[in-house]
Image 1 (cartoon, one colour):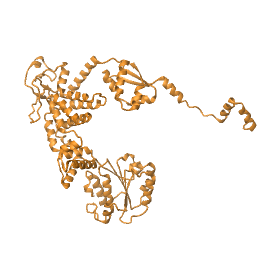
Image 2: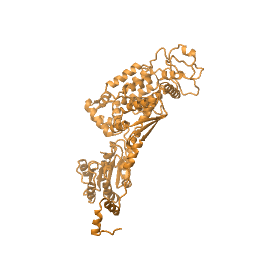
Image 3: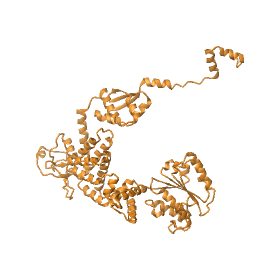
Image 4: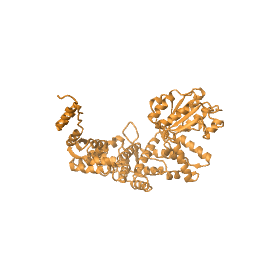
Length: 570
């Protein structure tokens, strides 16, 4: 009802109030921004203020005068709303222009609110342009759109443009808390944060979700009610998952993932949510970036607690593994196994890195001497038995790692008595992975033969969902000119379709363990010749050339010409 009640758009409200204060109002306004952020609401409030008979000192509508009451009751003749999504033809705009000619019966202005203005046709825009260029003094136009780029520049240049922002999560939570207070609803702060996050910056969406949750929970909203109703993964899963990974408890990790799948969550959603959790832990390690966490205070304290024992190198490497899992998820035939392998890699991340650096299959207890460089391990150090310590490489000038034993209660890494973990830097991890890839390529790389290419090509074909793409992939032949795989098609359309499917080259590189492979796609020579014949353009014949062809086919045509004396003989 008032500008002060519009959430998260203070810059727009203050600008409009200053325009009223200085009597410097434009004749046309354009409100643009994402859906559900208050564009139409602000347009209606502006329209009320323009015709309000008793504007308040802070330039808000009084909501008591005849003009405000008639507008609130949808009975105002001076304020017209037009939905351009369903009234987008040139006839609708011409009818609106006819109304503009008549002065208002009551009030100062005739105001036209056009919602979703980008839906107008080109002809409607052109018809509307002349009126927008030279409107009468009593006419004001307020346009609202979610897609400003679709509006023609001549319209944009004649409007005062206001960009509406997405509603921030704290502002949205505060608004929901005010509603709970007015409606006598009890709600947990973490529950309201989840609702705000699911709304994705749209206050209207958050109100719809909130209304649904209230109906579900009988005026008492809890965190469990929200995650159950919205099908959201509980944060507790991720905290338990990281605790199990710190203790290299792969059994607990797999059972937690199985519990998540049994509750109906998609593995792809889990991978992205877990990667976001690791990101939040990484953000929590620095006081400067803690403010980036858009969560409740209770949950923030739990993030800070786990961030104290989470090594930075582990978080970076785990994020990299989660990203690779997400990128390759689509091509994986066994989705569950693909995610489980990534979780196992994270669980044994440190042990795998140390084994790769030493070139052994099993990772014995590795203890680094303080007087030796970081990557040097002696035989005596391998056989020495010492109590386990959770070592973290701190960013220092020297290469000597420092041992840190976490003392945070409730969250402690459960380490076996036979292993000592020493996390290397991210550069060491990348070097170890590259070395392992080289060794794997040298041992298991299949030969680049036509039979293997056809087998892997058919295997990738099973992952394609589009029927037209499947047809293009089926009608090909292969050739090999190492390191090039030559794919021959029968049309340019098939060639362009295969070229757009860029993941096939990545798939083949992984299958052959070859990073130097290239995919050369060409159209067969027979198909090219056939297309050239089809595209030959015949020259149009002149009337004389047509007559000569007809005479050659039938000599009687020449007798007809002579009898009627159409044109002289040559």
